[in-house]
Length: 147
Image (tube, rainbow, N blue to C red; front, side, top):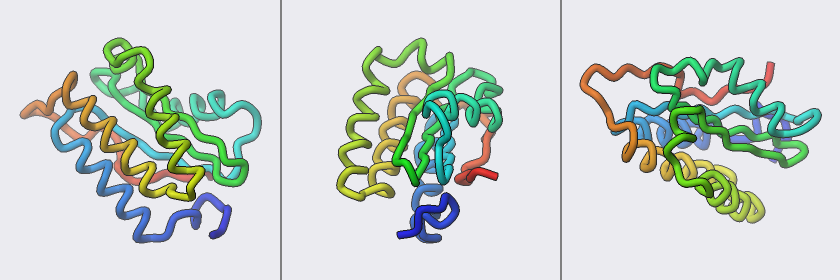
């Protein structure tokens, strides 16, 4: 499998990930984004926060956006929740999710790992940020890639 960001996942895998995002967001006002870089220069959390801001995940009305960030060449990843969700999720929620994704990634199950993480995040968002009748999709469901 190629290690560049844009062709790390096949078209079908990208579609499956996008569908997981759309499904996860059906019952919540929360927003989920996935971003793939070929390589992360520096600290993974620093780069993930940079992407978080660039994608304007912090601009959601309830501050309930989540970013799944992957750097495929150096096998780094991060999950970042915005202020609104971080105030209500259990303290160990992100660490447990990252641990489970790491297990899947170590086995080469990148697509399934992401889909599971997205699904679990959507379930959690639904509990605290249920879908409202006036809810709009504030962020794209498309996977974004480094420029």
